[in-house]
Image 1: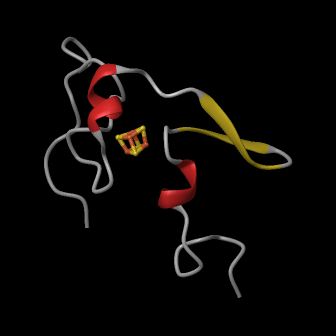
Image 2: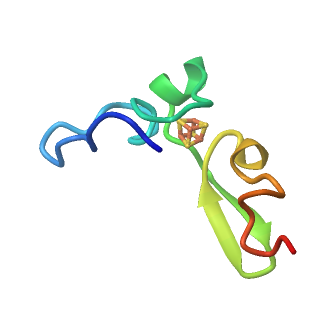
Length: 63
Ligand code: SF4
Protein backbone atom coordinates (compact mmCIF):
# COMPACT_ATOMS: atom_id res chain seq x y z
CA UNK A 1 0.00 0.00 0.00
CA UNK A 2 1.38 3.37 -0.99
CA UNK A 3 1.49 6.05 1.65
CA UNK A 4 1.35 9.78 1.16
CA UNK A 5 -0.59 11.90 -1.25
CA UNK A 6 -0.09 12.46 -4.98
CA UNK A 7 1.67 15.75 -5.70
CA UNK A 8 -0.35 18.82 -6.58
CA UNK A 9 -0.44 19.35 -10.35
CA UNK A 10 0.31 22.99 -9.51
CA UNK A 11 3.49 22.09 -7.60
CA UNK A 12 4.95 18.94 -9.16
CA UNK A 13 8.27 18.01 -7.51
CA UNK A 14 11.45 18.10 -9.62
CA UNK A 15 12.76 14.80 -10.91
CA UNK A 16 10.29 11.94 -10.86
CA UNK A 17 6.82 13.12 -9.79
CA UNK A 18 6.34 9.78 -7.99
CA UNK A 19 9.49 10.08 -5.86
CA UNK A 20 7.82 11.36 -2.65
CA UNK A 21 5.88 8.07 -2.44
CA UNK A 22 8.25 5.64 -4.18
CA UNK A 23 9.70 2.90 -1.95
CA UNK A 24 12.82 2.53 -4.12
CA UNK A 25 13.57 6.21 -4.85
CA UNK A 26 17.23 7.22 -4.99
CA UNK A 27 18.98 10.61 -5.11
CA UNK A 28 18.72 10.82 -8.91
CA UNK A 29 14.94 10.47 -8.67
CA UNK A 30 14.79 13.76 -6.76
CA UNK A 31 16.88 15.73 -9.25
CA UNK A 32 16.33 14.23 -12.70
CA UNK A 33 13.14 13.28 -14.59
CA UNK A 34 13.30 9.60 -15.53
CA UNK A 35 13.57 8.61 -19.18
CA UNK A 36 11.22 6.15 -20.85
CA UNK A 37 12.64 2.62 -20.85
CA UNK A 38 11.14 -0.38 -22.65
CA UNK A 39 10.00 -3.15 -20.30
CA UNK A 40 8.32 -5.30 -22.95
CA UNK A 41 8.07 -5.14 -26.73
CA UNK A 42 5.03 -2.88 -26.48
CA UNK A 43 5.36 -1.13 -23.11
CA UNK A 44 7.59 1.55 -21.64
CA UNK A 45 8.00 2.91 -18.15
CA UNK A 46 9.37 6.26 -16.99
CA UNK A 47 11.76 5.19 -14.22
CA UNK A 48 15.48 5.38 -13.47
CA UNK A 49 15.34 1.82 -12.09
CA UNK A 50 12.60 0.07 -14.07
CA UNK A 51 13.72 -3.41 -13.06
CA UNK A 52 13.26 -2.65 -9.37
CA UNK A 53 9.54 -1.97 -9.80
CA UNK A 54 8.65 -5.31 -11.34
CA UNK A 55 8.98 -8.53 -9.42
CA UNK A 56 7.60 -11.98 -10.23
CA UNK A 57 4.99 -11.48 -7.49
CA UNK A 58 3.62 -8.26 -9.04
CA UNK A 59 4.28 -8.71 -12.74
CA UNK A 60 1.07 -9.05 -14.77
CA UNK A 61 2.77 -11.78 -16.80
CA UNK A 62 3.73 -13.91 -13.77
CA UNK A 63 2.00 -17.29 -13.49
S1 SF4 B 1 12.63 4.57 -8.74
FE1 SF4 B 1 11.52 5.11 -10.60
S2 SF4 B 1 9.37 5.43 -9.96
FE2 SF4 B 1 10.67 5.48 -8.10
S3 SF4 B 1 11.10 7.62 -7.84
FE3 SF4 B 1 12.80 6.76 -9.00
S4 SF4 B 1 12.27 7.13 -11.14
FE4 SF4 B 1 10.41 7.41 -9.93
